[in-house]
Image 1: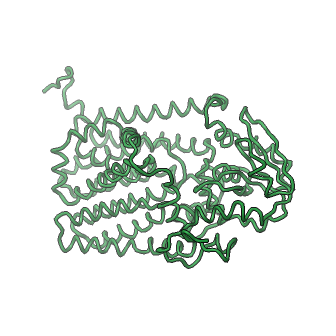
Image 2: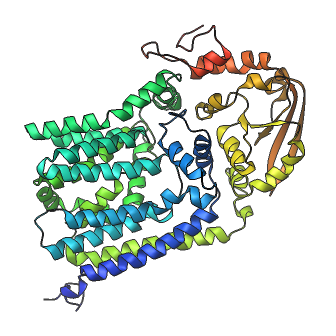
Image 3: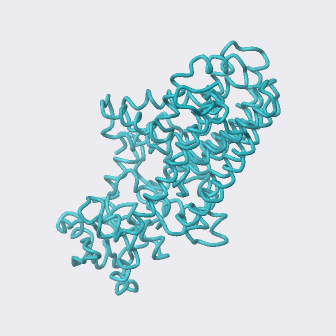
Length: 530
């Protein structure tokens, strides 16, 4: 029998497990080599530097997210603070997830012949390994532990769904609790679990859902305990402060979410899944496969609804991409797999070539962009630090925002505080820096724009000097504030911060708040507090 696209027989278009396995391991070696090179070559980004400073001072919680990535980095920092080492969990993530995908699909009892199951397993593993974000994403952020714990929690739940095994339900819950301590988006996985249990519920499924709840409980309990004694900072940031000015319907954000998913999943996957209604319906009828479908689809559907009012970050959905690819691998006809392998391989190779070409370009290539200031600070930090070195002995260093502050901190191996009101993202410095200890000291503030000395600095120093410097064509301003006046700064900067960022609702029970206890012991960190 011949296909309609020429004289090649359809049998020649199939790829067996042996070939797929060899392709997978060749891609694994190539991708790891590229990712290790990228992890070593790519400068530490602002977000990464921020979380590295969590690791330098580990705690039960941190300002804007639960603490898991800080704990991981604390362990890694006991060995080294080199870029590639701190990024090692992220570098290895696609390899770990793809190998686990292969092992899981080979072991599952889906009623397929052993050979067919092996073919599907290696095919799915190859897709997970070569997924667009898995080619280049070597950044160590809150999403790194989130993806690990969410992925293995979901595998445990899918296994539990086969025969309602209580051990795997409990394991899924424990891992989900760890995912929750990585990032709050883990709750979307819990929604998928609940949807599975409540679809034609049985006593064993509801009991399994209860075991998941028992297993997960330690995560929210620890987070609530820490937040009660720390100004409810995670809740204030994620539910209130970060969303200012972002309320209401936005016609731009749903198309942006669609474009994000087209990139992360590729148009091929989305198109083929849209045409596989019968195959998807067949999967839905089997409990284990239905759990996989809900894990792949329910969170992404919720994100689609949320995109009506908010921009959905590409990193938010990474936990669920592997399961979409598993579903795709299980529904794609065998004859179409070679084309899919070529597409994913070509797309991955295109990423590698593009990134390599960008790495060869001089930094001045981007001098006309709005982000050039940040690019210079990230890519050439030592050149900027050289300009600050003459002031190192006589000044406490600071920056105007959290990203430049922590970026410079990592590269200088010296902490830069955030001077001024900053934004909702600058508030972790409220935990780290005690401005009372800086009273009468000199403070240097690094800025990307010319300061308004009269309003921003003169009230808080005995004298102020401003110097303009240039690094690689990017202009920076250095504010040299001599003899800091803490009392004036408390009323002029910290008091507005208290009223704006620490307006904690009265319905949240609170046992402590570092900000008010440190600076305003007689004033409440409450909404409407005087």
